[in-house]
Length: 586
Ligand code: ASP
Image 1 (spheres, rainbow, N blue to C red):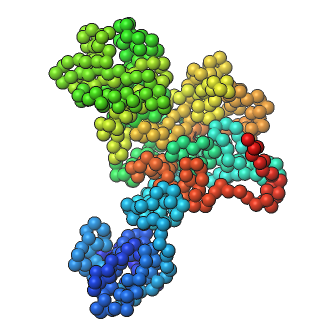
Image 2: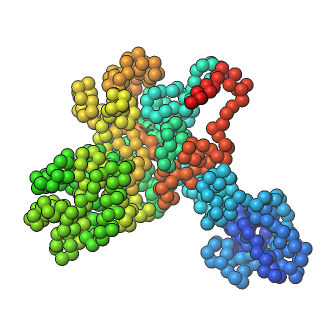
Image 3: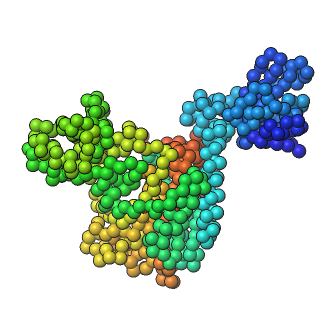
């Protein structure tokens, strides 16, 4: 046997056993007569001991071992005198009597320790070394566990995992496609799926009434922070369901995962908030409900006092920061700077302090009588000790800016801890949104999302008012998943394409396969997809998904380890009948 045990399993009651271990040299220490080597594998670290007095040759060899050498050591387990209770194997060590170097290692480009000296780029370039570090390795194990639990649960409620192709047809909706040229049909291209959306709908037409897949999706978007051009979804679809059947089913999955992965039992049903309520009260369609600070609309209470910033505003709203009435001038200035940042775009911040002694002091005192200020505090349901923060301006921008300010206050007050999880469903999204640049409507979710039946009559006359039968699962301010009840009727699907500005011919050319399928008995159906990477990162208590993906790309979409994207050979281009246009000289 190559090894009898792993480096993570020997305990005090194994003392006296003869064992063989294999692994990497984490570090070694010479203490005169003794040399200690920490041997690491996927399972843990075990201390090896070499004794200069009893085995000088072997001890000499041990002293020459470099970091990350791969070795095999045979020896006897014994109780350690100097125990390390921080690690599971810390009560024992192996007194080694045979040592083989299985492979040498160059000095690694960064230290393979928790506190590594490797910067991001270096860690990505040598990702296979980075994956030896405990934290990244544990993220991979967590990812594996979540995937296994998802499969277990979905199987237990009758879902079938079906794989769908990666080489599919390019469709102009949504994000940009990654395309793959065809050699056999030169001049034509496959696209990599942005999601298996239409394919899972076809599976419903086929009668697989409960489908899921843990599947890679590809979107060629300009990378915003923490997006990956390829990412993984838990993709699901069901037939003969209405919205709440889907929500109940996947609330079940979410609760199961919280219990299995985090040991958290969520017994309450997830609250449902409409898109409009979410926007009015939190200024975002993904509110972080770990804390309150719901917006209060102060438009009518604030207007008409001769204070121009209020009187000229379309919308005025405030939040109540509990216990912050003693914020210093400097703290208020910081918050003002915060809302004035170009990304947030507010002109200024207004405040009203409700002192612990009941006093009222505001940044607009000259224009408001004490009675007016009292009126504001009662609108805000404020109590002594509160600080009321107010923004004013055009409606959309004010709500969005106040949402950012709310999150900032939540963070400052320590209300956004990573160990608390507050899920909710956001429902009734608008079906379409208008794009000023291209002067047309785009599907807010995707073009296969059905309108609420009672709003269908508005589709041709006032599409912007139509609510979709769409929903998102939001946890701690992060969109974890989204889906909808689909259109399953050819005529309604054609109407939807028309609303989106497709001619019937264009719709037929792009989506003929789906429209055709709908002619052969499409069942009512709906589904959802979850961002698997993001969910795992959240369970891991981190914001960034990158360290939960074995081989991720950097923010420019490059794999720096593989050094790609990269040119291909002229021969390959010829086979594909492609030529590369040289960038024009300036
Ligand atoms: N395919 C959709 C997406 O990727 C999710 C869904 O509607 O099921 O966003």
